[in-house]
Length: 227
Image (tube, rainbow, N blue to C red; front, side):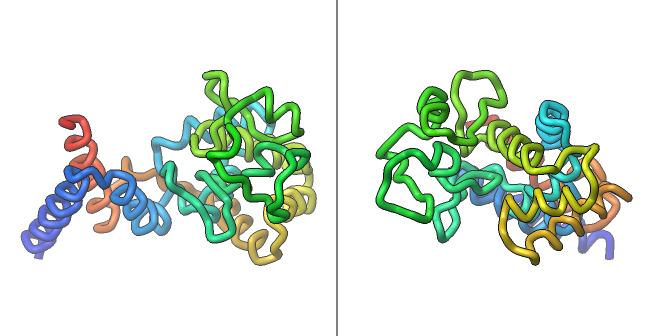
C-alpha cells in the first residue's frame, strides 16, 4: 500500500512539475492552494506576511489569515480577478484601492488597469484610496501579497477589527470588508479554528494530502530555480 502511495506521489509531482516547467507556475500554485492549503492548513510561507501586517495595524494575524482563506484560498497569484472585477490576494475593487474620488463610469468600483496606475501612492492619497505600501518599495500594488495584506489589516483595524476590540466589533469589521452575513460566518469559522489550532503547510506532513502538497511544491520550486 505504501509503495502504491509513494508511486502516486511521484507521478503527481512529475506531472505538476512538468506543467510548471512549461511556464504555468501560477496555475500550479493556485491548484495547490485550492486543493491542499484550503483544506489542510495555513501556508507557512505566508505567516511572516500576516504577522507583520497584523502588528502594524494591531489586528490578529489569524483574522487576516482567515480573510485571505475565504477570499482566495490563500492564493497570491498576480492573475487573481473576480467576476465583478475585484483583484489581488485579498480581493479589493480597483476603485476601493485607488479611491472612490477617482472619476470613472463604472459605479461598481472597477477601473481598467491600463487607464491609471493603481500602484501610485500619490494618486491613492489624492483619491482617498485604501492601498498601502507594505514592503516599502514606493508603491502599493494590489497584486502583491504583502501590500494587499497590509491594506486588509488597515481596513479591518479602521472598522473595529483590532485585537482589543470586542467579538461583535470584529464581526462588524468583517461585514464592512464584505457585506454578507455568510461571509462573516465563514471568516469567523476559520478565525476561531486558527485560534484553537493552526496547521502550517507544507512544513507539517501528517496526512497523505500534506505529503503530496509538500513534495509537489518542492519539485515545482526546483524547476522554477532551474529556469
